[in-house]
Amino acid sequence: MNPRRSLIAWAFLLAASVASVAHAGDNEFSMGIEGHGRTEAADLGLPVYAGSVPFKESGDDKAAVTVGAWVGTFGLKVQALKFRTAASTERVAAFYAKALGRYGDVLDCRDPAARVKPPKDSDKLSCDGKEPKAGDYEYRVGTAKSFRVVSVRPDGDGTRFDMARIDLRF
Image (cartoon, rainbow, N blue to C red; front, side):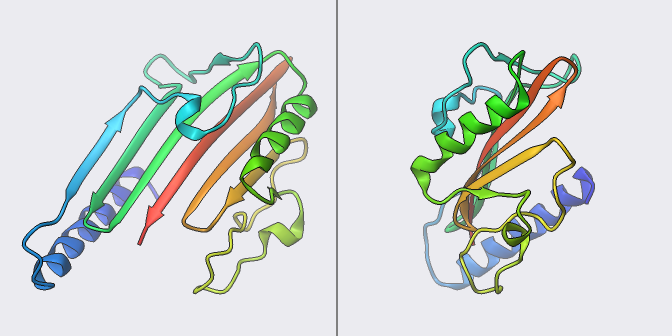
């Protein structure tokens, strides 16, 4: 889905949420949109691999971002960071597999069992349906509505890694 369609879908979702809250008879509710580039690793609850530097793909790109929108109890918040390091992909991947372990069982998205979609009413986390490219790693931990994800991949003579915390309230 392209960014413009995503924004339109969010606008309709927010409008529908406002209407449902208003019809519920509640005279007070919260609504907001958040967006900034002041995100830090502590916001995600994850450490930064030693010697890593923030990574920008282009001059206008941000290495850190937080975006969110909510109406009443419905909402979404994504906090993301991008880094690059001279360390090997395998070392960085092992570091993050261990770091994510403090939040529960870590899914390795290279494992086919981790990509099996759970029943719709389940809060069980899974990976997206496609397998990461050869040499890439993706780890997830949490629930379907609140999770952390780290992707690690080779980048020239070093390693690029992205990490995010995603919270969905629906």
